[in-house]
Length: 130
Image 1 (cartoon, rainbow, N blue to C red):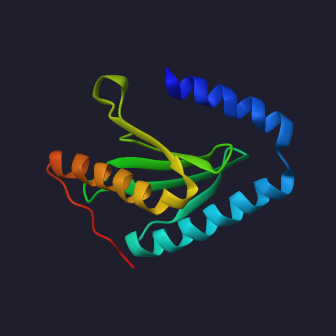
Image 2: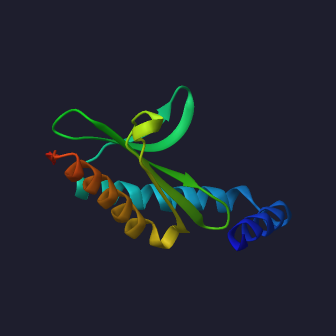
């Protein structure tokens, strides 16, 4: 409930003080962090999907099962990292965490760790090519 109230307050403040230059700075900072992180874990960042701008990573295990990690840039220096196993609703697994941009690397590793856990639980592995 408090998080919803905080999001509402942030939205209101954003209408009052939000500038496009601040938005550009946030995007550049996120891009820099994400590019460094992708090199360490051997993933490729997808920037566009069905004509929409995205920041998404596809993780494929050695059996061909697909997982996805994506980043949403929120207001006021915050991001949301989400993960899913791309299965049907019955077998769907998901994970999500919001944080400050300054903690993005940590949260990306947490999300990626969750995906690795799902891969391990399914009895598979992931080979990283760097």
